[in-house]
Length: 493
Image 1 (cartoon, rainbow, N blue to C red):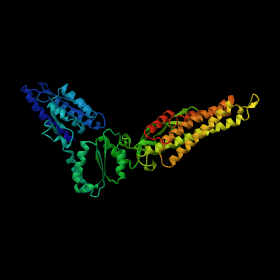
Image 2 (image 1 turned 30 degrees about the vertical axis):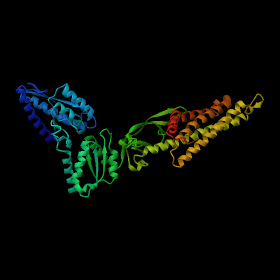
Image 3 (image 1 turned 90 degrees about the vertical axis):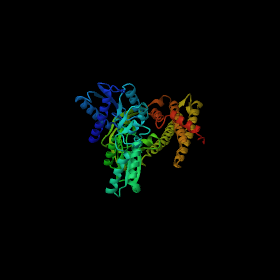
Image 4 (image 1 turned 135 degrees about the vertical axis):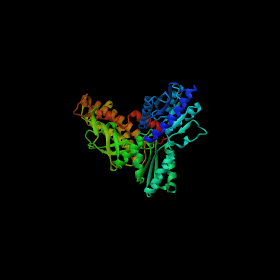
């Protein structure tokens, strides 16, 4: 890289010397004067390719040295190096500022294929030199359509062919996995690599791409290894190259980092099932990309940050978790890689069945206690069970509980038959919680003041049912789900 930078600045110095000689004849273009030559560029000092920012800082240091030695023909070189975060829209914004406000003589050494692509037409239209750009995509060698653009790097495809020839010579039996950036940079490189392999291109067992916005390429590396690759060709920017090296060194496992609130039983559990993003691209497209892992609570990096104290549960069954770079192995994967969201949804489905049964069970228990009580308690010379104001509400509660019980059984049967039963599960849970709560409330009413005592226990059941109303989907969320399913055509009842 040192040689490349040296070669670049020698060429640029020659060009600017020529510009300075023009200036001596008073034939000034914007950015040139008797005392200054102003040039500009964009660099990724932030963002996913920020490691390349070193190049911009090196070039700035070079021009500082040149200026300390008297500049070029007595003229100081001012380099305006702007951060574009490796984002094309930001590149356009910064470049327009350099041309239209700062009035640079030339855009020199701007870095990146997608970023330079976004400004090539603009700079050529303005006839501003767009030279020695730091990218080797084949598109830059187009003097006919873009005469003001010249590349600096050798073509990516040519470089890739060199690697291919090396592999053919030194590793003729290689099983190659390829990870490449999904843009002109990655595609040019991949094309050159395949051309270099020629008729041996079938040595590539799998090729996968990534987007520069992806936070990690761990899942792609795991997939390539699963495909049997024993040689990895990485066509990446530094951040993702470093991730690939780390992931290969980690072996077949993963590392989990994140936070989670409302993790049931985590303060006392020995294991937790953790769902984490393993393929950001799939997750963003809602096509999977989430996996479940069985994680021991004594693992290094696992911390119960705090215990969440809930209404009706003095001991605290919920925890706020912090997971910091926790290593998990393939045997800890629950189900299939990238299919964890389906597993999580199935867990929610089972939770709705469980909470439906829980609500019905508590309602039936409360009803039985109420029936026993009203058959014994006397008022105004008769058992209070004989008064319709007492017995009719209990009859209504029994009817509703029976209906809720059957709804829960029906939803469970549908699950057993492999159906998702989204509507039926939502109906069963929402209805069971409501009727269970009403049944307990009516049982308290039938007991009178006794119903409020801790000895009878009905108030504790009421607290439980209030919590169940929230768990695995509030009634409002469930009603929304039911309506969506009905409007989508799921009207079978």
